[in-house]
View 1: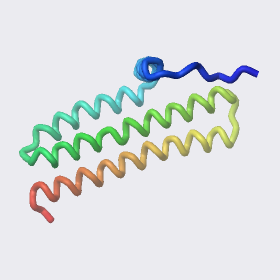
View 2 (view 1 turned 90 degrees about the vertical axis):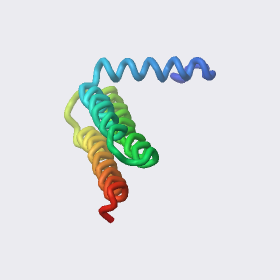
View 3 (view 1 turned 45 degrees about the vertical axis):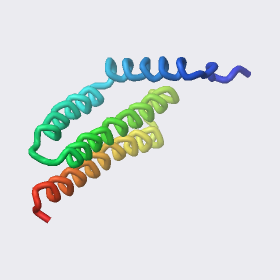
Length: 123
């Protein structure tokens, strides 16, 4: 039985990653929104009158929801590969993927609140 495993090397891995990125940008509206928010909030993070370190933390934290959206999309695609019909386990898997994204927003929001409170001397 031939496994679905291509030969790997650094160049191939980079090509696969770029192909995956292009595919998710083309096919996942939620990912497009995540990238849009990264650009908007990233611009805000770097425009605030705060120290470089604070801006960097804010900017880097914006990648958490983007990464989680990629994980969620992967979960959804695997579930769709297994079955297109309604199944309670498929629903639960997709719900867990959505929860990952929701929690990532919560964590990112807490990071922003904490960093801005420190940066502006509120705490």
